[in-house]
Image (cartoon, rainbow, N blue to C red; front, side):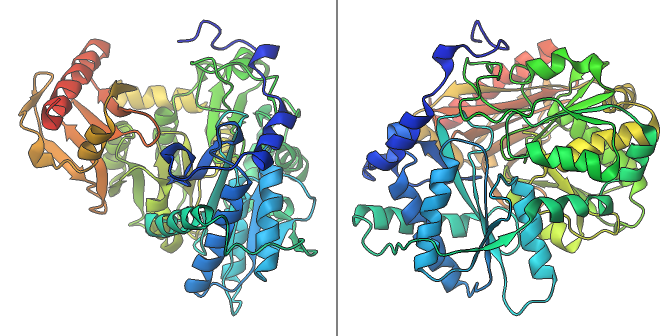
Length: 539
């Protein structure tokens, strides 16, 4: 823990935006260096221009690869292009536009020449493809999500509107690295021609009444505080308040590529993580000024919920409350609509699902797994432990197939308006009924070889038969919901579980663990988890 975690950034913590953009154009990656290659994680390619991990060469090559990929898939409709408020997002958008123009791709950018949240791009893609055109649309969002100010990000959303699957991202990354290695030969560039425009904000905000009970929120007159954390949702929240007559205050309307107003995260970095009590310290301090307050990260695909009685809610706690509320009140959802969760989310969700009589659909980490179910209505809600989720419209049809932090923030206000109790008070009721789980993620060192081995482990490689004194009930290497490999292992008992997965960026593996017994039991689970995994890895 950094000694200034939760305190406002100082001048020495801030980046130089001009130097950042200069490095974007001046530095050129060496793709023989793994740290400088194009690598698509669960949310696209990310990195900083300062260390040659996110530079113009990357974006030109990735965009050309996306052009070739969409051509191979027969995608001929418009491409919706959005960006967030990071300092590298605007230059990356300009680079992408050059390649798209040279390849004859019809691009629709924001009509206000402004920032666009990830869920607004997903919403736009789905809206176009639902309208019965002869072609299909897809999209690009230029964002590193909650990452520090020096980072840039670039992600592709195919016609289903959600994150591209691993087959698509692997192909795009491999082709992009080939193009960079060839000195960008094969990359077409041209001066961007006047592109089509699309009012992302108007179309998204105008449709919110079909997924959130905005009338109930307005009638309740609850005072809402919305903190965009300097991100792409800043102008959306003001319009939401005006359009629906809400008693809503945008807590901070500042947009600054340095994020000088942010409080430092746990490790002393500026990070727009709305699920972190350190990054959200300013809003937590003002929690008594509002009946409910919420935060979003830079591209608004994540949410943070702050209540006067409890402060910042743990994301797992809020997901459980959201599920309990939605499945009790969305009467037009399919009666067999499952509850989607990632396998490292709290097992409190399992208990809530059981009480609702709903099927629990447990999938590997990554929001992409929820996309098919959200599209056909067979999954009513899909949520990740890292504060990302989306759910269906009132009529049971798809809203977005990417994470929507604005939606989940508004749901917190709906819950308070309709029930008269905050989400944290609802969670206290769940604890009284099901117990009080303790959840934490920690990291353990691992070499690259060990990480590769962990990703391929089978449940059969786990020789232990007990965990923290309890019999092991399952040893999983594939998700129960869809049978997909989890890239690690999960071990469960009746009172606890742990999951171990390799980090994609650091020489560590991540141990997620939860206990329904208490803190001391959780520490036992974590310690035994490390011993169990190290034994399986031969460490």
